[in-house]
Length: 252
Image (cartoon, rainbow, N blue to C red; front, side, top):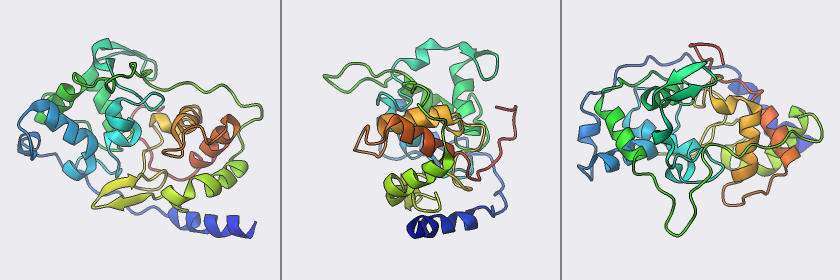
């Protein structure tokens, strides 16, 4: 109990959110100026894996596309993106109408990255689309399951108090006691899970059912399925009960 209280103490500090930084428009030539390659897919891959570093004024969360879409969007159970772009336009259940792939990318920018949408005709958008068109399964492996692998309802109702214990046992080493993650040169080594650097409350992972599915399939990183279904539901309830930015668009 003493250890749990010590680990949770920094969470009280994170409840006081600093004022949100103002957002400015990204440079219209940002994608064209990306280093190392002149090919659009490579520019898009850089944006996908270094989103915050390359577009810091576009959003408030210190996350990359790759923070949720693991392994460049090729990992089953982690919002895999192989072939997904070709399924659009399609119905978005959250919005209740059909959307294009450009609009879906901007849903990620405004929710998961807690920022503003890209201009749909911007070089950044074109680069990301070019990358998505090239995302393939790793050589010799089957195509990953797109999206998430839904986790069945738990035997017991999800309990954030039990989830706090799971977090301190299996998550805190990487994501820290205050949920703030670990960063190197503004790149998320282990991304923030709550607080001002995390996804907002309109993101998919702000729904415990989605977060539980992600956690059970992929966490802790490198030790897949080390968290039981019940533990995944409990820790998701705990994480999503913590303070995070509010989504300012249409309600979830």
